[in-house]
Amino acid sequence: MAAEIKFGTDGWRGVIAWDFTYENVRRLAQALADYINENAPSDEDGKMAKVFVGYDRRFMSDLFAADVASILRSNKIDVTLSDRPVTTPMVSALTLKKFWLGITVTASHNPAQYNGVKVKWAGCSAPTRETREIEALIDVNPVLFLYGQKAEQKNLTDLYQKYLTSLANTKKIATFKGTIAADYMYGAASGWLETVLPKNKIIALHAEHDPTFRGLQPDPSLKNLDELKKTVLAKKAAVGFAFDGDGDRFGLIDEKGNFVTPCLVAAVLLDYLIKNKKLKGKVVQTMSMGYLPKRIAREHDMPFEEVAVGFKNVAERMALEEVAFGVEEAGGYAWKGGATDRDGLVVALAWLEMLADTKKKVSELCEAVTKQYGPSVYQRRDLPAAKPIDKAAFVEKLRKKLPKKVGTFKVAEIATLDGLKIYFEHDEWLLVRPSGTEPLVRIYAETGTKKDTQTLLDFGEKLVAQYIK
Image (tube, rainbow, N blue to C red; front, side, top):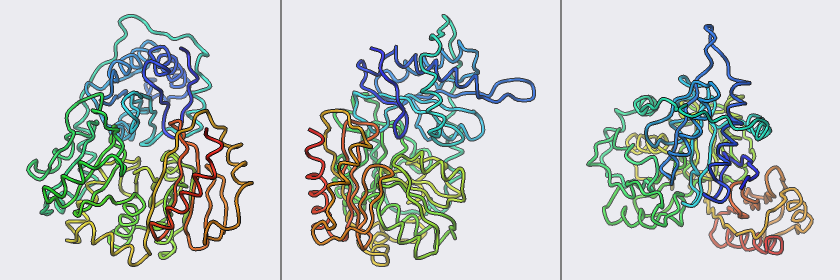
């Protein structure tokens, strides 16, 4: 079935054998080939820039990637195909110097029935203007797939390992005394911490290769980390790390078995980098992130901006401006002097450095930040949408129904950059937005107490109920 191929917050995704099919992947591959041939620079000898194709551990990802690489090769593009599953951040890192463009077959954190394609450029996700150009080229030319045009396969993991260690203070990390529980969620990040740290320091969960993920969604959010929480407590680990299916998202469990929200993970990281690494510059976050980074930026006279959901929007700002720290709600973090794209392994190593440097526990670092900048109770609800949603019309309908107060919270400001975000008087907020990658409407809220956050979520759910049935 020839499906409409549209890039969401990071890449195109679909259900395997429904819309993510050989036919549709080949249509996209030809569009990518046409885009590359029109835009890729050549060196002084006239040789075109190189392209790298990777893939994760999902069902048939290697075969889809081989097809993509063969079509590029048929279109006379200098392409290298990975000889093994790799993380998306590795593909991003390879586009910093060695390759002009990176393409990887992955559906990131989505359930096992999904697969997808991401495009990486200059160390991060291809900007929206580029992905729109690629979309416009779909079906312009017939797929050129010449028999025998196979791409050269290589193992480039050594380059990524050098990249990882160049961003980490390995001497400081070596002084960390505790044990680490690592939930790889059957994803492509499996085994990577063991290349940097002694294996006896790591308790690995779900490290084996299983394309079904054994029923586990490879998303390092609260609902999927029960086993990691239990392992941290049972093994008395100092910290629990979790990585999504392609290794770009990061989840954190403290030594007490508590899930640390992305809002708090970001705040602790930002506070440490400012105070200990003299970090300066602008703080950029997506609309779905919390108020703690805003308060920290305000305290240190750092410019602050919110952008549309999707780490590529943060990355665009980081590429164009003097941005010190960028973060999204879905577990993606980047900072000046660190990773240019979100990378769960880089964030894990940064946390190990913090723990070793401060000699504090995870919960103690979190408590120190909330004591200084205020408590944060952040939660999200995902509601299934029975039919496609026109985001602009959806937002306008919701905006017209908004009262001036929600419970005891007085509305201070409304933003419609990506969904409907309601800011209240003391930084509390509620966001309602259709997902860009799944048939869901997401409702996010953050206040200083669990009760108040639940109140805002309940209001958001009632607000959207009639429009998603």
